Length: 597
Ligand SMILES: Cc1ncc(C[n+]2csc(CCOP(=O)(O)OP(=O)(O)O)c2C)c(N)n1
Ligand SMILES: [Mg+2]
Image 1: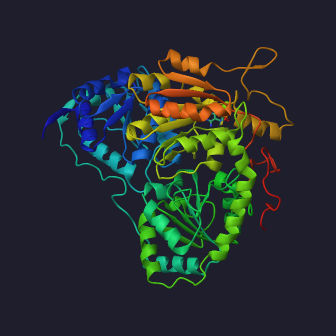
Image 2 (image 1 turned 135 degrees about the vertical axis):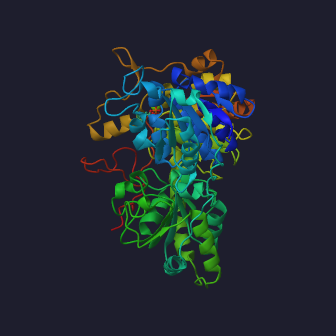
Image 3 (image 1 turned 135 degrees about the horizontal axis):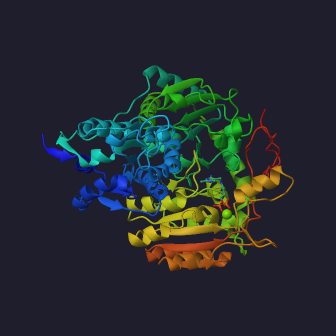
C-alpha cells in the first residue's frame, strides 16, 4: 500500500472520479490541501472565487448542466459556514456537490482553538451542516479517509442526488499513512430502479381510460436524463406536459404538447389543464406550494377528485402533499421505458385525447392573445415580457439561462421556453439570492461551448458582485443581465398587496426624499475589468445582448425594467394565516378562471 498524506489521497481520489474542478477559498484550516492541488494542477483545477457562497453555487450549477459533480473546498469556521445557504439550495433542488470542509486539529478538539465550534460537541461543523446535506462524514485519521471518501461520493450520486460533506481536521490533510486508493464511486444513474409489472399495467390502465390526462414533470426527469422517453411517450399517447422549473426543457417547450409552468405565475393553459385533468401522471415532481397554488383545490390541481399516479425515486416525495392513487418508486427513465414498451402491446383508444387537446389549444390561444402584445412593446424602462422575449430570440436552443430569484424569475417561469434539458437553471426549493449570478460561472465551466446568460435582480446581484472578479481572473465569459428595478420588488409587491399599499424596507432609496438609488452597475463592472452596457429602453436590449453573447467575454448588461408591471396571476399562492385574496399582486387572468370545484 502506498504511503500518502491525507490531502494527497483526497486529491487523487477526486481525480480518479473524474472531478475536474475544486471551487474553494483558502484558510489556515485547508492550506494543507492546496499543495497537493498545486502538484496535480494539470489534472484538477482550483478556482478560487471571492466568497464561499459563490463557490458552492458554482458547483451546484456545474452539476445541473453536466450531471457530473465537482468539489468545493472551504476552511474551518466562518469559511465553511458561508456555504450553508448554497448547500440548502443544492439539497432542496437535488443537486450534487462534494463539500470538503476543514476543521481544527484533532489534538485540539474541545480546547476551543481558533475557529472551533464546540458548545455541544467537538469540532462540531457536522451539526451545523447536517440539515442541508444528504450526509456528513468526519474522518479523524488518514486511514479513515478511503472509506469516507468512497461512501461520500456514492451517497452524493445515488438515488436522489444531493450535496455531501466531508469534514477534515487540519492534521488529517497533513499526516500520512499506508492507504489503499478506493475504487471510484458509481456515476449518476448507475443504478436504476424500475416499477413492478403490475404497477406498469395499472398505470397504463388508468392513463388509457383517461379523457383528460396530464403529465407533470420535475427535476427527477431531468436528472434521470429521460427527455427522449418522455417526449416519445407524451407524443405516442397525445398527453400534454406541464413542467416544474427544473424539469423545463425535457420536452421542447415550443412543442404543442408543452403547457409550461403551473401555479400562481404559471401559464394559463397549464393551470386550466391541471385543475381539469381526470388523471395526472407526476414524474420526479413534488407538488411544492408554488407549483400547486398552495394546495388550494381547484386552482392548479384538483386532487383527490383527479386521480394521481406519482412516480419518484424518493419515497418521501410519494404522498408528501397528495396521497397518490398509485405511487411508484422508480427511476423516471426506466419507468417511461417500461410504459413505452407496455403501451406498444396495448391498443390505444380510437379518438385518444383529441377533444382534450382541442380544449387546451383554445386556452393557449386566449393566453397568447392576452400576453403576446406586450412581448413587442417599446417602452422605457423596459416591459418585463420584452426582456424575456428578446433573450429567447438571442439565445440558441442549447444556450443556458441561469435564473436568480425575484420578479424576473417569475416572468421567466411563466414565459421562458426551454428547448433542451439542463439548459434552464433555477434555485427553486430554497430560492437563494445569488444563485443565478454566481451559478452562471459554474454553468459556463460545465459547458464552455454554449452561451450562458445569468438573469439576476439588482438585489440579487448586489449580494454577490464579486462574481465579476472571478470571471475576469479565470476568463469565464458569462453574460449578466441585471434586471434593474431599483428594489426588492417581488417582496415589495407582496407587501403592497397585504399591507394597505405601504412600502417599507423593500425599495432602494437615497436621502430623505427617497430618490431611487442603485450603484452604476456598468461602471462597477468596468472597474472590475468587465465590459458593460446600460440599457434603458427596449429598442436597445436585443442588440446589446447579441453583442454581449458574441463578444465571448465576461459582459454585464444593466437593464432598467419597469417595476410597476406585474406578472399575470393564473393560479394562487397563499401565506397563512393571511387569507388568500385575489390577486395579492399582479392581475388575475381570464374571466372564467374561477377554481374548479
Ligand atoms: C439570500 C436571500 N435573502 C432574502 C431572500 C428573500 N427575497 C426573495 S426575492 C427578494 C428580492 C429580490 O430582489 P431583486 O434581486 O432586486 O429582484 P426583484 O424581485 O426586484 O426582481 C428577497 C429579498 C432570499 N430569497 N434569499
Ligand atoms: Mg430588484
